[in-house]
Image (cartoon, rainbow, N blue to C red; front, side):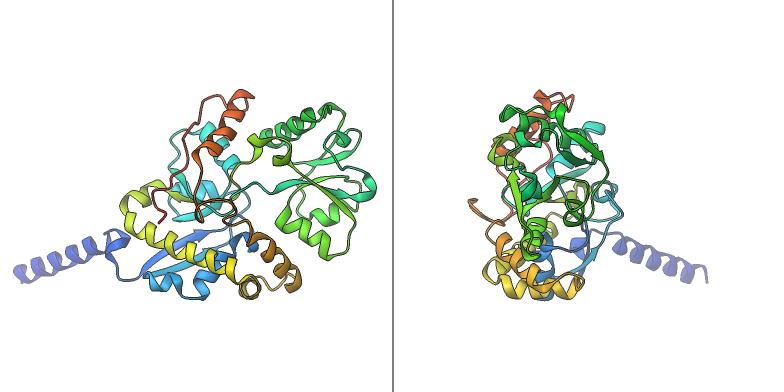
Amino acid sequence: MRNINKILALGLSLLLLVGCGSKEQNEVNKIKFLLDWTPNTNHTGIYVAKEKGFYEQQGIDIEILNPPEDSTTLLVASGRVDFGVSFQDTLAMAFEQNEDLPVISVATILQHNTSGLLSLKDKGIDSFKKLEGKTYATWDDAIEQATIKQVMENESGDFSKVNLYHSTVTDAISAIQTNVDAVWVFEGWDVIRAKTQGLDYNFIKFSDVEKSLDFYTPVIIANTKFLEENKELAKKFLSATKKGYVYAIENPRESAEILHKYAPEYDLDMLIESQEYLSKEYISDAKSWGYIDSKRWNNFYNWLYNKKIITKSLENKGFTNEYLN
């Protein structure tokens, strides 16, 4: 009986050891992917890759999750999820608080920063200088306000003359039709929404005025421990993801229809127009999807450091192209 118990115990131990192995050892690998917001056209390639079976072809079972507010970076760093969507500016502040945070950007979704200020045309804000005397909705972030200050100074404007409305705007189109004159938006989403809703608007882009603000937003991040233990799996995941985004580039209308299945609350015509715009931005002038240019990455972090928004240099920190094919 003792020998039988020993055999049973040994067998159980072996099963536990197998179960504790890296994900690469399993035939089907479960990957948890955390969005930054509700599903939108920034995420289309992920849903296309899932719908078309590109992950399945790589032996991956992907679970796409919606995050609690502003929590993706920390949840990826904690190891509770493997990959997620974040932003270069968000990573900067995360590293400022904890330089050893176990998270890194492994691919960019868009090649260039498409964000800027949206306002109704009758407000007359067709340059950043003309934000003087107007009301801007701020979420009171250091990088956000330094960005507005910089682009205004580049046009001889005075940030101190801006009326700040301290509120996080979740619906930009509704906000600019109230007491708010201008909001920070992304061209591929809220500007498209304004256009499809027939609004007369102005949109001015930050990177057109200050090249240091052409940072990477959004990006795909990963837990560094997961990468160390599952290097080949990470490459397979990004290979399937890249295939999804390339498919979206070549088939924007069909890809928008796929996204609409997961986000039926949005107008399909708006999603199609947004997708057609972003399909030109996924790769843009880069050599391939996902590639992060170190010079542009460092330009933004050096700008933050020179402006004393961060207290230590983050040059070459927080990104890698190692897992991209």
